[in-house]
Image: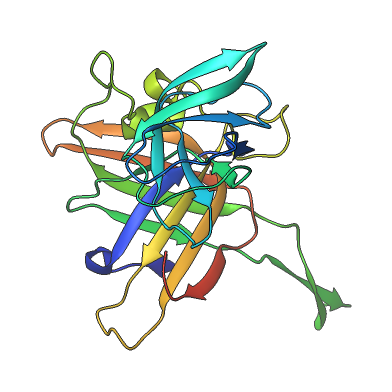
Length: 242
């Protein structure tokens, strides 16, 4: 069982939306511009989609699409916020997605449990050998502050419940699962930044989470979701920055 001190951790819900395109302007664009023509995109880039530009010198700014225009069904122009923080050149790569939202935990918590069933075999009543049993998915429970279950009209950021249910502003989110025939899923991503600044940060991913229950407590002001992550164990890595 893993349990986090949430004073030093941020939790994000992410979908599987990933598309690539490129800047389409021979002169490039200077810092301060907030609309660009692009090419190389297959399909539509929805409002609210985050993206980054691979440019020289490199940029780390994450932008969000606020408007888009299509030609024969493919996005060829985007308006975004904030405005460009640096110049970009023609054919600089643009990486769109995934969609994500930061979870407001409040006084809640996140716990997950990895299981490794064993089968103990006997020889005429005596312990003989051991072998692995069937694989089991990760059990996940997330207790959250109840703010709102639905987002206001015109909002581009979904509520937690909408992100889990693929509704409202999250209606266009894409399942994190690579199998289109499986039920909709999201990745739960934990950014753990320990108090000691000499230590590296840790990225923990619970992939393809599907809720199985949503428990609402109006008096306590909490929503609890429990379900399973379709993996045997969490993906963990030490990083210098998120």
